[in-house]
Structure formats: structure tokens, C-alpha cells
Image (cartoon, rainbow, N blue to C red; front, side, top):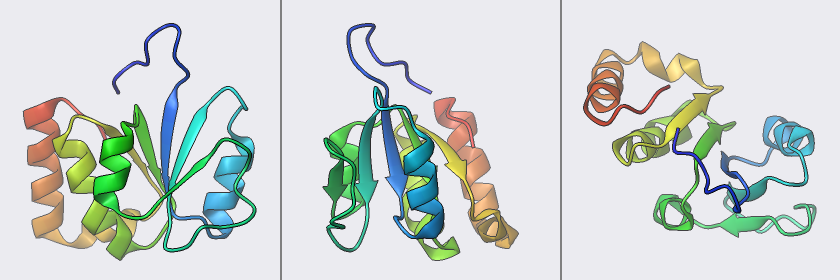
Length: 117
């Protein structure tokens, strides 16, 4: 995980804002900057959180770590892009790793960039 500068808050990217994503967001301290990759702009995002439309927007936002709380498909499309940038990913959809090609790609990206899953 890249560390936020001492004067900057930790930036947590959250993939998904369903039941699990909302629970994760509620557990994060208010001092954490939150960017949420979601298909809509939920009215119940906490004050200061940013709704992000796609993986490019998430990467451009510059998270220190990403928490995936969506589907296996969302994991497969977003996690490799984050890991390729050296961003650690915490995954809820570990079932996606049953795909041996995706697992090999994830392991190679982690080896290459030093990122962690």
C-alpha cells in the first residue's frame, strides 16, 4: 500500500456501494477520504465522499488502497488495474480467483509491482 503523505488523509477507494459497501463505508473513520466506484451517485454517500463512474476515474482519484465490495465481475475488471498501479486491494469477491487465468494475472501483477491482495 502506498502511504498517504503525513498531512494528507488516507485515501480509500471502495468498489461497490451495495449492502457490503455501505457497511464498509460506515466503518471507516471520518478522517479517511473515500472514493466510491459505483454505477450511480447514491444520495447516502457520506459528506465529502466522491462517487466515481469507472475504473479510470478511481485510478485518477489516486487511492492509497482499494476495498472491493462488489461482484466477482467487478473484481475481475478493477482489481488488476489497481494492482498494476501498485495499489493494494482488499477483496470480498475471492470467488473470482477460481478463474486460474485471473489468479495467474493477479499473482504476476503483485510480483511485478509489489502490490498486495
